[in-house]
Amino acid sequence: MARFYVLLGPPGAGKGTQAKVIAEKYGLVHISSGDLFRENLKNETELGKLAQGYMARGELVPDDVTIAMVRDRISRPDCKKGALLDGFPRTPAQADALAAMLKEFDSKVELVPLIDVPAEELIERLSGRWTCRKEGHVFHQKFNPPQKAGICDIDGSELYQRDDDKRETVENRIKVYTAQTAPLIEYYSSRNLLVKIDGQKSIDEVTKDLLTAIEKA
Ligand code: AMP
Image (cartoon, rainbow, N blue to C red; front, side):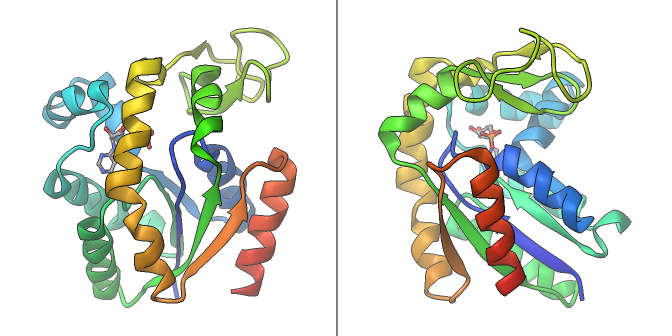
């Protein structure tokens, strides 16, 4: 049966960084809804134009649009074995929609690791973050600097600062997380799917804890 995991956590918790390592280790597809929106933005698609304003303000793109985009991605043949979802679901309505779509594929969410980082630390993490243009690999000027400034260690492409990593937008993204996404902690915990991971440990230690949690599930 296909295995689907949801990585939950506030913006800047390290979901993208961890998702890349874990997806590779288990041969799972990594689906980042933020990356899908950014790709649409870059290619100037209708979806990208629609999402642009919400993203720039640090708000959520409406559920119906987001759900349709993820559904389309999950339906592709490369997800037959499962996927690691990063940044989706972000509302209880999205979580309900995910459960319904996975049911259609005779599958379900196996586990929801929550990468837990206190709000005070997120602003510093996000404002020092550098992202690679090609694959979205993430670095931090203080906590995880690239070997050569401005260049991705992994694929050599240019590193840039995301527009929505500016301080005002970051603060709003954290508020939006608390109001709209944090209810998913209770949602998944009441379904016995949530496992809390301390996101303040080093990147390697967080990876280890995530792998242990997944192996146990
Ligand atoms: P991320 O890269 O996950 O931080 O997402 C960047 C931005 O894309 C968010 O601030 C939202 O504007 C939008 N976005 C990504 N995923 C979702 C989602 N599941 N629901 C609504 N909006 C989303």
